[in-house]
Structures are given as structure tokens and as C-alpha cells.
Amino acid sequence: MFNQLSIRRKLLVIVLATTFVALGLAVGLLSAFDYVSFQTRMSRDLVRLAESTALISEASVVFDDRTEATAILETLSAQPQVVRATIWARGEVLAHYGELIDGPGAIRPDGPYFDGDFLTVYHTIRRGGEVLGGLRIQSDWG
Image 1 (spheres, rainbow, N blue to C red):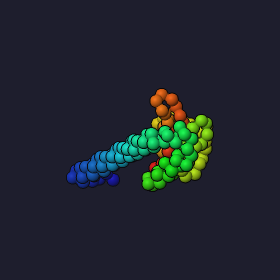
Image 2 (image 1 turned 180 degrees about the vertical axis):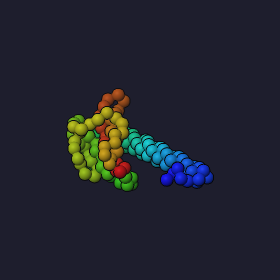
Image 3 (image 1 turned 120 degrees about the vertical axis):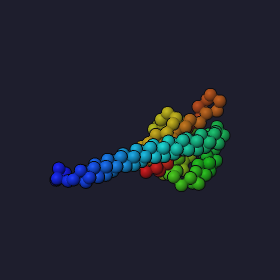
Image 4 (image 1 turned 90 degrees about the horizontal axis):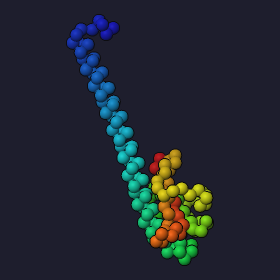
């Protein structure tokens, strides 16, 4: 069928096909870039939130103040994407916000982790060089 077209129509088909392929590639690349940028921004923001929450939680961990630790985690309700958070010290849960999934046995090194529909950030709570406990914040990003 293509062989039966005039030169003008063949050129038009070739130009249109090339344009559609180029547009498809551009849209695909821009979508991939946007997805990666979104993941990077979200993990950076949640890491910053975890750092500041861990810093504020230091005194409640030192003094084993569960009420204060819970109040600190309750402030995370201002972030609608945060679904749960846990502070642990001395091998046990000190406070949690949202549903408690598991205790400190599932601790990972500091940093962001994408687990399915969730972005989870772990942050060690320290005083000087001494490790006091840890913080896990989980955000819904899916």
C-alpha cells in the first residue's frame, strides 16, 4: 500500500511517523525525569523531617518520656503524607504515631527506602557520639 502512494504522500507519512516517534520519546523521557525528580524531592523532604524530629526527640529519649515523645510524633499529623512514625530507645518502642507495624527489630541504616507504596526514612537519635535510639517515619507516596 505504501508503494502505491505518491512521493508527496510518502514524504508526508514519513514526516508524520517520525514526528510521532519523536514526540513519544520526548513524553516518555520527560515522564521518567519527572518521576525521578519527584522521588528525589520527596525523599529529601522526608529525610529533613526525620532529622528535625529526631533532634527534637532527643530529650524525651534521654529521659524516657513517652508522653513527650508521643506528642512530638503527633505533630507529624500536619504532614498528610506521613502515615506512621516510631521512636524507639533501648530496644523497645518509646512512642508511635499511626499504626504500629513492628518494633525496633526492623531497624535499617539511616536513610530513605522505597517499599512499595511507602517511603520510609530511618534516622538514628544521637547525643554527641552516643546512640540513644532511632526514628522511623513512613510516608505514603503511591
